[in-house]
Length: 392
Image 1 (cartoon, one colour):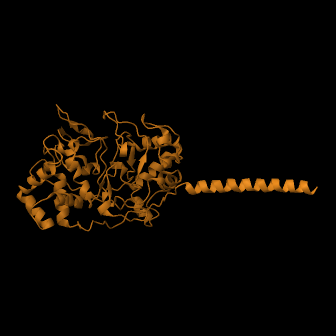
Image 2 (cartoon, one colour):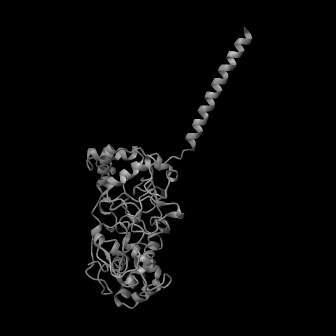
Image 3 (cartoon, rainbow, N blue to C red):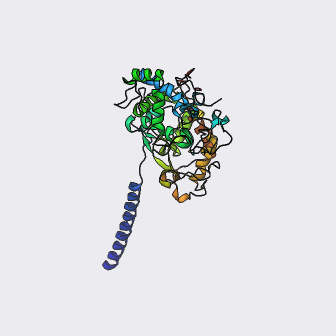
């Protein structure tokens, strides 16, 4: 009788031990799952500048003129504003950009004939709010190390401003090599008395140089902010700034998993994630992203009204199509032939998005639009060239 009792007791002890083991195992699995901060706040009211490039009105005005002056391009036909025009929210209504040897603005821009310059392989992101690039969920950021472009390859607006000038298909064209073009641009600027005077006012020396060229353009770009959207007002305490349906959309946005990557004041974690956006057939070779991983940085969701079409290659024309794309990949369906579902970022697999929730989320996203940005278009530029490049 006693031996039977011991057998039964040992049996229950073994069951309890196995159950505890399973509980510990599950608990350990939970610990391994990375937690994502989904904190979302209003944009700061004050913009920070790097210590070596404090913002002044003189730099900002010089940067504005440089931004609109096609003298910065190899063939003097493309300006920064060609692909980042204020009428288009400092982006462009075009899937992928068209640089030198072209004319027209946004969706009407076409290559001249004959032409052998390729399309720019990525969608032109807006310049607005790039002053806040890299900002985290605690509203902290370092403007001297702010990540730029779809692949985070450059840090700071000062360095970002110079990259399109050096790129063959963006602004450089055939006339100069990548190592020659910046020196050529500086030589051109130093030949123009008005620019010499403007550089002297901004930097204390009338001799333009590559570093100050980047600093001036960055100073202007840093002035382009929209931190007074209806959503910002709501987060600052105005409960009536957004509608009930938009509030429902905000809660859904967080609940279904969008905020896993689109978080912080800029609705971006500034990290690289692998998705499977459809190919853009204008590109003969697929853009493989960061380290050929098909990974691209999370874009901001602010001012989406001005930045269609969407994704790194402009392959999705509307916000509805973007959400349908995310529904597909959350269900394990790849939209790119070279990206298997096993390559998807783990955070993407956690999305739980349904068709009926899309309209509410889109209504929320519209609260992030703010058209109060500076739209001043110079009547002329010191070079005397067409303002904004060949856009007419």
